[in-house]
Amino acid sequence: MSVYRAPLRDMQFALRELAGIEQIGALPGCEETLDVLDSILEEAADFAAGVLDPLNRVGDKVGCSWNNGDVTTPPGFKDAYKKFADAGWIGLPVPSEYGGQALPQILLGPTLEMWNAANIGFANGPLLNQGAIEAIELVGSDEQKQRFIPNLVSGKWTGTMCLTEPQAGSDLAQVRARAIPEGDHHRITGTKIFITFGEHDMAENIIHLVLARLPDAPEGTKGISLFIVPKILVGTDGSLGERNDVVCASIEHKLGINGNPTCTLNYGEKGQGAIGYLVGEPNRGLEYMFIMMNAARFSVGVQGIALADRAYQSSLEYAKERVQGRDLKPGSRAAEAIVKHPDVRRMLMTQKATIEAMRGLAYVTAASLDYAARHPDEKVRKEHKAFVEFMIPVVKGWCTESAVELCSTALQVFGGMGYIEETGIAQQYRDVRIITIYEGTTGIQSLDLIGRKLLRDMGATAMSVGKKMESVAKECAAHSDATVKRIGELLGKALATLNETSQWIGMNAMGDLNKAFACSVPYLRLWGVVAGGWQMARAAQISAEKIAAGDSEAEFYRAKMATAAFYATHVLSQAAWLAREIVDGSGDVMGLSETQFDLDRKMAVGV
Image 1 (cartoon, helix red, strand yellow):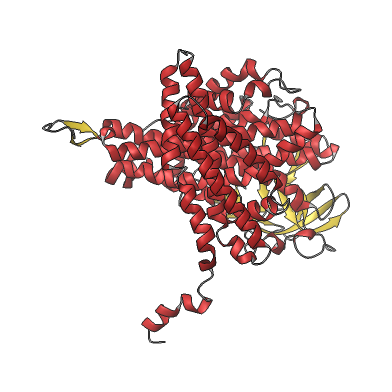
Image 2 (tube, one colour):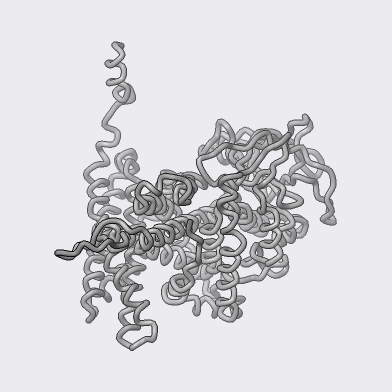
């Protein structure tokens, strides 16, 4: 069974060459970034390999246990969480006034990738602290910030997002949890399901951010408010009081991520209702929760990169060790490792090239988070904010969908040995499956991309991003290096396909929304494939320059050139058939009536 090792050199390339962390370091408040970058990455890699990775299998096999409302995490998790919190990892991007390190958001790219690759079951816990901290910091009162944020940053407390209810999955308009005013607080009643780390034994308190309705709230999403509901009540001085009326009724039995307790929480089970504190203004809760949701969606996209890379490492190690078959050279009978087989090479290259494209796109998006928050020029901030909002559904949707496919490909490299639990790759395949679902399914991400992003501004942001990609395509197509030139030409063709498809969707949305949205997921994937190709073309361009200059790491850059070339011919080429599926096939999606879906079954039983 393989041990996870962080791909630090690839991460450095994505940070420095693609995302431009040197420029991030010049932004106000980021001046120390470059001084601490290497040490942060090395320490995070050591923590991932030395503390989290050994617990990954334990979390899967032992899992969490529930007993009369209390949840016990797998052996070693509680101690690992204390070490994680004591090391200051939770407060990496948090302002220093709350005890954080005030480092740029871009550092969440590699650090989150390491935590999740090493042990996604564990990583989901502290990940949610980031969103809770950001939501309270941006819309909470000064008193709420001082009372709750420092302990969330230190890790003494953890945070949750409590949205989903039994009757309200992704449709939050159906939220029924109630909030009744009572003095300086509210009484919360209702049930929330699928709450990640909603109950556990790793921290002394849990701060739930809960969506609920006030008595006079309008129907639908406009009538939802946001409340802070502590597991244990917190005094104005920060001291802990009595247990709040929040009970964990059960934890789910799941396909994967078994180290992560997924809880059903009952608010008001004792009859009085849990004490909660309104955050911000009434009836704006969904708007506020999206602060957490956007941060979480980006993080889940990074989870896709993480799990795909771990699976790739496992399959590569196995391919090097597994001797099977014979050398293909004429007359040779020598046994050889399967890494030499052409089809195994194809599978490994598919994983490696796609992961590099995903990482590049995610880290570039993370850089724009910092520009949007810190750049002194308001115009620049707005441009990067628009880019981030457009790219987050792509990063979340494309990276997670790709991760499922890549983990499946990794298992295929193992052959039959991958289908049994002892090799470990089966766990990675099980763990990855949830990430296309939570924090908004791929379908929800794709509807967001088309409805809120593409159509809302009449394609202005899409065109702006497209121009950036087109500039790189033209530069590469005119390059003196033959490989870079070919990559640029292929990127140019894929961009033309993307532009034509976007125009088709825009035109059809004016007449038939069903047709425009029918292939929204293939459209999101088209954006991911092309945007990933944009980053791989940039990587090839940079690598060619480094090789020509006689860089001491020429072999590393030649490898980058090879994966970029493979991506252009094997992954970027998917743009053509995705476009055909969208343009030619959208009208066929609604081709059957509801009764026709059951027609064959009814005929078979003689109905």
